[in-house]
Length: 438
Image (cartoon, rainbow, N blue to C red; front, side):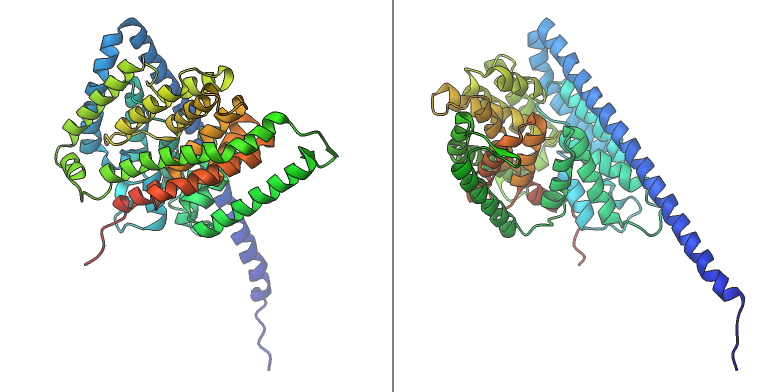
C-alpha cells in the first residue's frame, strides 16, 4: 500500500522559497549595515581632520598653550576612558582580535565591540587629536566598524557567524580608513584571523620576491603586453629595499617591544606602576609628548598625515630627526592608556626614515625610498608584511614598486621578530580575552 500526502510535494518548494527569501533579507540587512558603517567611518575621518585643524589653529595662535594641552588632555582622556569606557583604550585592533577569537558569556560581549564602546572611541580619539596627541584613526576605525557590524546584525539567524562578521568589520575598517580595499582583505587574513601560518606566510612572500627580482633582473620592468627598458630608480629600489627594510624593522621592533613591556602583563616595575597610577602615568606621557613637540618645532602633533605627504612630495632634510621625534611622540601616546591608533604615525615615522637615507646619500631613489621606509617601519611595528606592502601600493598608486615593497616589508618583519617574537596586536589582545575559568 502506498500512502501519498498531496501536500508534501508542494511543501518543499515553499520551504525552499522561504529559505531563499530569508537569506535575501539577511543579506540586505548586512549590506545596509555595511553601508552605514562606511558612512560612519567617513564621518569619523572628517571629525579627526577637524580635530587636528582645531589643534593646528590653537598651536599657531598660542604655541605654549598647545604644549600645556598635551599633559592636560592625556590625563583627562585617560581618566574618562578608565571610568566610562575602558574597552575603548588603545588602538582597538587587539580588542577586535580578542572578540573574534573568544566569546564572552555576558550580554554585551565584554563591551569590546559594542555601539557604546564605538561612540566613546570616536569621541575620545577626537579629543586626543584636539589635544595634539600623536595618534591615528585607522585602528579605532577597525574597532568602530566591527562594533557596528556585530551589534546591528546580532539578531540575524543563519548565514555568516559572529566571528566572520567581526573579521569582515575589521577588514572594512582598514579599507575605509586607507581607501584601500585590497589591503583590508589582506589585513583580515594576515593579522585579524591568523589565517596564514606565519612561517608559511613569510615563505610565500620570499618566493614571490625572489621570482619577481629574477624576472626584473632578466627582463627589466616587464609588462605583460611588452617589455620596457629597466628604470634606474626602480633598480635602485630593489637594491635599497633590504637595507631600508632591516632598519625599519629594527626601529619597529623596538617600538612594539616597548609597547609590550609597558602595556602587557604587569610583570615589570613600569607596567605595575602604570596600572597603579594610570592617570598620573598618562599626564607624564603627555608631558613627554610636549617635550618632544617643543624640540621638534611642533612637527609631532596629530596623526602625521600632512608631514608624511610633504616628505613624500618634496623630501625633507630633517628626515631622521623627524622620524625619531615622531616615534617618541607616538610611543608616549600609545602607552598612555588613551584611545588612538599607531598606523598613521607609523607611516609618518617611516617616511622620515626613508628620507634620511636620501639625505645622507645612502640611497638615490628619492620618492621610492620614502615609500619603502613607510612600508618597512609599518611592517616592523605590526609584523604584517603583506598588509604593509599592499597599503603602500594602494595609497601611492605605485604598482611597479610592489616587488621592492614586499622585499622591504619582509626584511622588516624578519629583523623586527628578532626583537619582538610575537606581533604586538596579538600580544596586547591577550589582555582583552575573557578570564580563564577556574
